[in-house]
Length: 119
Image (tube, rainbow, N blue to C red; front, side):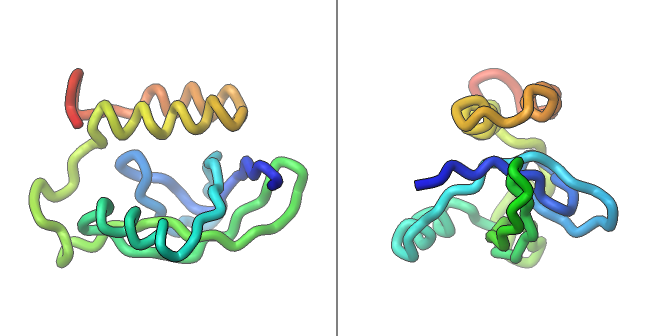
């Protein structure tokens, strides 16, 4: 299986919320997932829904993937809050494991989070 590290067209807010913004992009790790695995992930992403995202791998290939964006009407609690420390560390760990650009990893490390020990 080919590892996909990509720059996604759009912008990233609140840790992993994808929004369209002309001219903007961010680095991400793309994972190939089965439909059953997506259902499990969807259940943990309360308040978010899928959007198609256009991605370009580091070797220039165009891939259409799926990302999550926020839906206030589906939010259970807390509204817009920074990601938990645990969630941010998952994002950073994935970026490091799949060798995203070092500057992108450093930028993700600077993302504000809810504080030490938050899950």
